Amino acid sequence: MSLAPTLTLNDGNAIPAIGAGTWPLNDDEVREMCLTAFGLGYRLVDTAENYRNEAGVGRAVREAGLPREEVFVTTKINRQWHGDAVAGVRGNLERLGLDYADLVLLHWPNPDQDLYVRAWEGLLEARELGLVKSIGTSNFKPAHLQRIIDATGVAPAVNQLQCNPYTERTAERAYDAEHGIVTESWSPLGAGNGLVGHPAVQEVAAAHDATTAQVLLAWHTQQGLLPIPKSANPGRLAENLAALNVRLADDEIAALTALEDPDYALVDSDVFGH
Image 1 (spheres, rainbow, N blue to C red):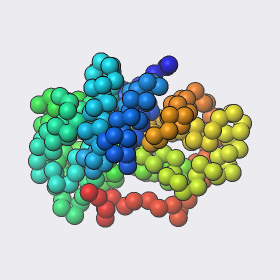
Image 2: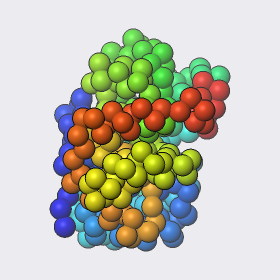
Image 3: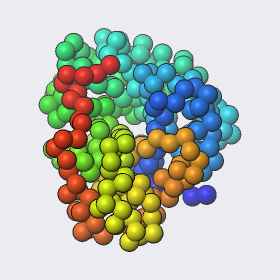
């Protein structure tokens, strides 16, 4: 078993370069998946209040027999906590059954209620209180990020985005990189929209004796993106982790990037969010 390398966040903390997503698994399913993933070498697990499986994730973390500091637990708070993010994080920890989270994200900016700057200030307080090691955002566009940075002088450590070759999020990734923010990819394999089976992806996979999922995940990791694919299948979990061993050539990365599809369903965080 080999562990994933880590990326250094802008707050000095380290985060594994690939993680295990957990939506839409329930508590029992996610406990089993996490224990399997930890046994394979995963050390990053991504959950959220909205996923309703934090309790199962926490059980797996406690039962895995690993030192707590070796497991990186990410969770997220909902819009209802934007006015009191500290209370939101305390709720996360109560459900997880953990003393702290490694990373807490604002799940959506929810600009309709216009409280995400206050929520970011609350996450800064939660970090000062020791409830969380690192703080970040999810589904934040550059305009949202600029507001919280202007208000507090603190950039998120991570910004989690819907990102894959069908929607590579060029502008958002460039902004994140400029501000030292790690871009974390949700739906890194396209979420059943034909990306995994695309002939261009199959061609690259054949050249590397790899699965199509592995070359897509390599597309993320070799560009400094942090993918969090979800699978409850032990074989696929192992294959996904082994994507770290696939090395794509620059022209192969370019060929995958060229798959950008303007018709791919991108969730607009200005109009959607929990």
